[in-house]
Image (cartoon, rainbow, N blue to C red; front, side, top):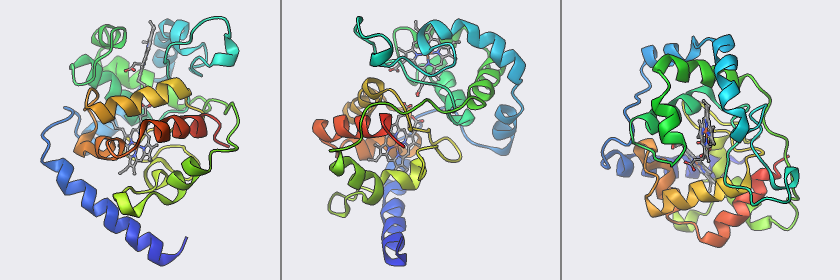
Length: 228
Ligand code: HEC
Ligand code: HEC
């Protein structure tokens, strides 16, 4: 990547932070050294045990549910958890528990987990391989461009600067997207766009999703599900 493009990107990212910071607390989670250490020290074996109750929805290996695995039923938007950044999974479970993110099934499930359970589960799922990509990523040139270059006219940074060149996620709490279930992915972006989901610290995803059209969101979802 050229140094000029890099500089421009950093400038765009710098613009994003101060706007979001005024929006108030999106989440009770703050990534202090203690908090980071707490998640890192989660007990992987306990996490594996606890995860048995998650498999009926998220798949036995946390791979999520994809359409081709079950063509006859309408697949609800269930995300993969395997290979996810542990801090991200931990934060989402705590956000559901604190009503900072809400969902008919997950809110109740997360309220039944202690902070320790959430850390154990987060560490377990992060130890599993990312979900396999599926579907085709040809004819998705617009999404590919958005991921790699963003759109300077709309002050949209490329997705990869945060979510990683391999869609693997980044520190502290930026989720992996590679192989993520497309229906869930699109639903998540639409929820940030409408503000229904507002647990992203500094509004990092809301500011981006607000500027994406529904067509762009659908294409990005397909692109990441097929990510290679
Ligand atoms: C009844 C089905 C069901 C069960 C059981 C279930 N989940 Fe979920 N889970 C979902 C659905 C559906 C979503 C998407 C919710 C949304 O859109 O906010 C989700 C979302 C999540 C998310 C957010 C993922 C992301 O990418 O942001 C996490 C983390 C999660 N679940 C963890 C768990 C864990 C851990 C367990 C077991 C203790 C579990 N879930 C059990 C259905 C379930
Ligand atoms: C400034 C950094 C940044 C950029 C750029 C960025 N994201 Fe994100 N994204 C995040 C963070 C941080 C989260 C998690 C927020 C939270 O805690 O809810 C996130 C969450 C998401 C989620 C929800 C994942 C899940 O499992 O629920 C999706 C989907 C997503 N981003 C897609 C994109 C796409 C597509 C782009 C490019 C158009 C993009 N992001 C650009 C930082 C970024």
